[in-house]
Image (spheres, rainbow, N blue to C red):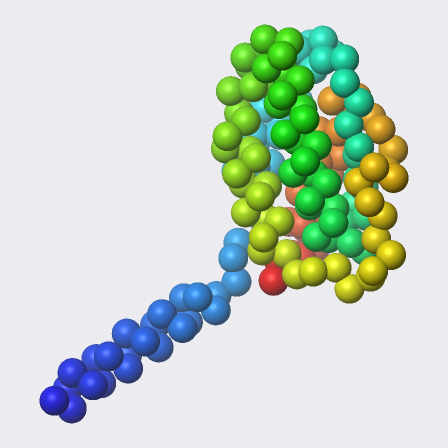
Amino acid sequence: MLRGGLSLVSVSLCLVCLTAAPVSNCPTDLLTKVNTLLTNAKELKELDCKLYTPTVNHFKNCSQSTMKCLVAETKVLFWESEAADLSDISKHKEEMVGNLEDLFYEISPDPDPDCLKCESLVEENAEMFLKGLKCILESMCSLNISPV
């Protein structure tokens, strides 16, 4: 009986350690997808859309609201690419949006109640938006910003 109890404690301890372990905060797979999209610059130029584009400074000061904006604007980017029948871009939709949403839910709420709303940010074309997203993701990697 004691043996089973010790096993249960060991398993429980492992589960606690696994759930408490930090999630990888360098989204390299997402960074790879963004780079892939940026190589399709010709197709990106065909998109006639403007996207609210946060910067690295926005992310440093207001991580959660920045990620929320990036998720929403990435969805717009893919809707626009589908409407323009740009399959080299739209084929990355599910994975990229899912990965960004995962990052959003891992980030702690913004401590600053005065964080800008997405609609207050500068509008950029699709290529500039993706370059901004790339910079934010690289910043997450280089600064080792913990998502939680």
